[in-house]
Picture 1 (cartoon, rainbow, N blue to C red):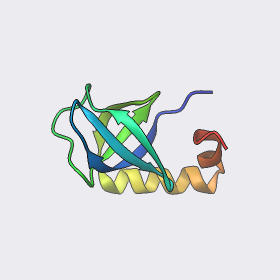
Picture 2 (cartoon, one colour):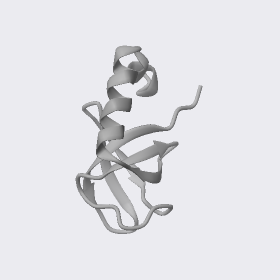
Picture 3 (tube, rainbow, N blue to C red):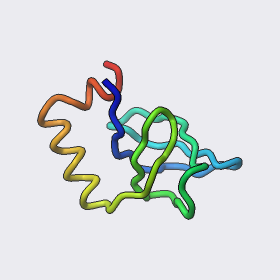
Picture 4 (cartoon, rainbow, N blue to C red):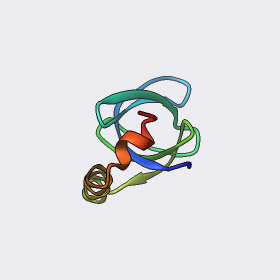
Length: 78
């Protein structure tokens, strides 16, 4: 199953790259599809690409629901 999940941007690098935090796991993602992303923003991530920015409140609610349902482990490949 493939999921697009919210992740918080912790570092923006050169060449449209960023490091995001996914439940304590840090991953490199491409920002090539989204403009104006800054540290602290939440983005929807799917197969290594940020697809869109997400409202922080909505991101937190979604992450909490996913954790409650036990989906975070699946999304992170654990």
